[in-house]
Length: 314
Ligand SMILES: Cc1cc2nc3c(=O)[nH]c(=O)nc-3n(C[C@H](O)[C@H](O)[C@H](O)COP(=O)(O)O)c2cc1C
Image (cartoon, rainbow, N blue to C red; front, top):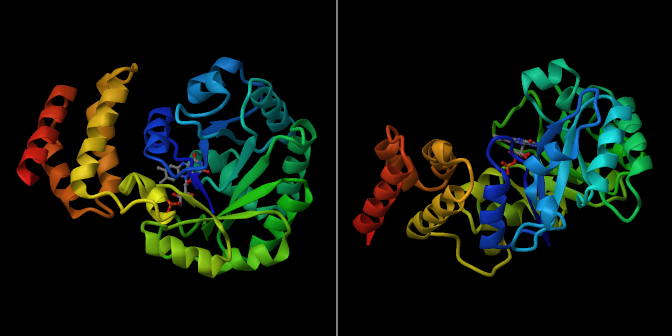
């Protein structure tokens, strides 16, 4: 089984990757996307997004980190893939699933799913600069408005030379509305001969088991579920029980500690609140706690609130 920590722009940054991979169970991380328009971006842009590049493209606990690129210009994406590889990225991931309006207006992300030919051209150009011993992967949704091109898109990606594909089992139009259509991943998997990673709505050990059963995949990618239950990957691998609320509070404090060592301290209370909105998907206590801390503006106050919550449940 291989478990990937999903890319999540504005949420799954290098601090969060560091924390969650230290909790354990993740075999790979994909970075938040870097948007490529018409320039070969300088190394500093890549290193800011992924300081893991200073550590052989691994988190401090040793999990490989792959840079994700988003754009529509095949030539420019290839130039940037070349750059990212040359400064040490563990392969390249291409984003063909982003639903954001601004991204799609500029013909990046999910809008490309309307044109399997464009996906083919992009993957083929990028493959030319990503040597075979580096992985080239792509992440797709099942389509833009509907699923009619799901299989054709996946075939285009595979035929153009990608090594792997991850499928978020929803169309762009379906956004993040449940359910994720895992049986569609099985249909895709039947028609291509590269490894397929199943993604979408895995929040528990049971979800992971059902997703693998229905999709036929032994590779899964987890985003919101990893934020809701930090040790979900360990639990899926049968190594630990899923985190309790008391354990999560300890992890929140670790996050405060990691972050205060960086340069992001002023955003910290908002980041904790953002994280709690994902946690409340699985833990009702997180919803109550979020109400209690919603006006907090400083790290000290947030720490005091976590301490108080810990005392109240001990
Ligand atoms: C806030 C947010 C940001 C995201 N950013 C990215 C991104 O940068 N690149 C990408 O490929 N997918 C992105 N996604 C999609 C996730 O990687 C994932 O496919 C989706 O959340 C479904 O998986 P999950 O149910 O495990 O969360 C994002 C999702 C969310 C909610």
